[in-house]
Length: 360
Image (cartoon, rainbow, N blue to C red; front, side, top):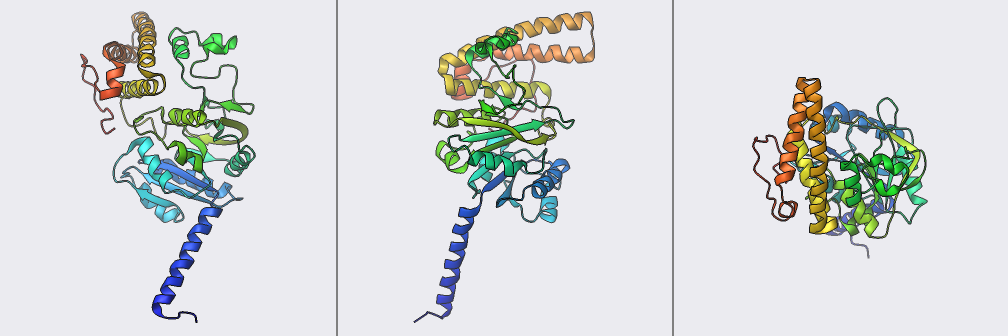
């Protein structure tokens, strides 16, 4: 006999809810994870473009908020109630903040997206359809355009030790003749054709959810850049290539969500820290020291060029550039990249750096 008692009704309701949750997980095709930190000026247009252009699959949007105080969350809750908002209460940075959103995702695919992007008609539908056709691959990137429609160049090769020397010595142009000199860009390719790549920039990166959980999400030690570089390298190491398709595109306004927090010198040094963390993780102590030697060499050449420029045509801009390069050279000359990676130890400088990323 059926149990129509209150306890029985509650049990059936819980069972129905559990079935609904399982069905959602089975049918949810895409989870879009957006990291927000005081991005009210751009995130509304981003969300609008997502909902207006994605029609052919079940998807969810998760906004992981890093302590915004500009009304971003109020705007989202008022205008886009379907968005799943997670308030972290403080700035967790890119890796940790995105990982919160990834952990809450239910889709077959997870798409990491910047808030300063505009999604073109059918872009997400097309990118997921492309991924479905390539089960051998683990992550995917699409064509990213500037606001004026030009190609942004957000697809990069992995950093290598010989590539660092090519960049430092101004020899990247030789990659036109030999890929051995490839450094931080594909010099003979402008995103016109489908191909395997090192990594797409984190402004738009699609990853299989199951694979993401297997290899791990973003490594939080990379607090400023190299987050997606490291993730895609681990995806490649797991035996899954990263593919790029030009058949779908988005616009990345560029800088609206990043170039507003720190002064140039503090920003540049923080980037150097994560650079050495990356080389130490993937190339060991010997690789980190080699990366330092190439960096110091390149900075010496940059300092000489900046000095001549300031001498020939002095200006406030050339003075600031010279000071930036001089400080970076001093820091890199003094730093032990291995101790930096192991203990976080940084050198004392003749000038005090302000507005560094201290919460790592």
